[in-house]
Image (cartoon, rainbow, N blue to C red; front, side, top):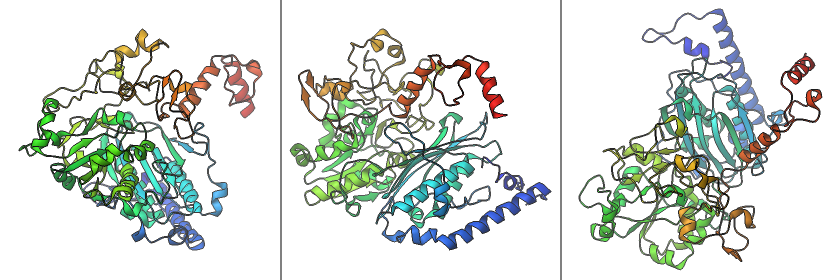
Length: 564
């Protein structure tokens, strides 16, 4: 789309009166598109990309099988992106490092100039495959995704593994007139063209978001697991996953007695929003009162008991489930699992079924996650608080679908929402980690100094001396509860963030650390540090990628002359 190869098609549409006559320039573009399609078909016949290299009948694929929004009808005619052949992979886009954690990640930067009044669309999805893709297919998919990103206005993150894909992708209105709504749906059609398994994918579309909700870069991460649990396939086989429930069926089961609902997300996500409205609901259809003081009456009123495993990262799930108190809490009960979009429940439910399947009265998971539930229940249903998301929206309230994302300074004294619509949804954990005043936003990449998870810090404390004092030990509620006092930078961790030693002479150590706010961000910080130092070669430096600072004017002229 950045090249404008779909612009003529949008111009050819005239509302209410068929098509207008095409100009000579538009005829040439159409001819070029037909040639590209013919070349693609010939290439597919030669290499057998679809069906042969992609392997496996989609009927054997394990994934989030639900009725997705119809993506076949779009206002602008769909022009497929050409699938590169295996031979072309040698000349494909080279992998660029994305920090020390993802050395083989690929970054595609959009060349399309921003549009001032543009709208943004998102698509959230994941898809597991069974049996696993061969490595050649994952490599080809990565090259294909890079090719798509260079022809359409896209941003976001997509994780590619032999077991499938997990993605959050955004698009904005292009300078050539292609809407974000069309672009994001054309992207999903490109995936359908690549492999039949995506016919079973539950694509969650969110449209008409503000322009700053778009990711500037399109990042492709090759990974071993879509969600890293650190479990072998035989410990959590996907065919043993929980029963998928629609938002409506999940809502009904939340009201059942002898039921527990387990939050498979991290504790810092659960701190600002969760499913526990059902525990204090009695006769109200919505799932009622949101007064936390009524919680002791939960047993009398019925409804699923909310359980927070209090995880810092997904690798903590197995340790939590293997505790004797956990098994006692779940034994004989219906177990409902949920997460943001559904992907974290797949392995978690499989592991639970594989370990306690005969000891519980069924394992179920929310199809499409909290995103689907809040779409089905705009008033929130049994949900309380905000849904923390991993995109530019930041966190979504029932009265704020566009999310909280953005610079706090641009908003007048941000305060947690307390209007009538969301009254009572303020949770006890929603408070600043320093001054303890009400606060519900994770901003500034502030993190717990003992385990690395994000912490809630208000804008006033962000600029205070307390935040800048190295002696002040900023901790998350979980570390305070567990009396963890040893700083994370003083502990030896495995590559996956697990503590080598659980305690030290200085005190208790967090069992795991979340790598948050580092990686590529730390690399950028290092470059900024170098830019404050003058290059010893000065204007004579001929390295265009030199990190150090240079005298203004002289070097720019030198490089410009070299390019001539």
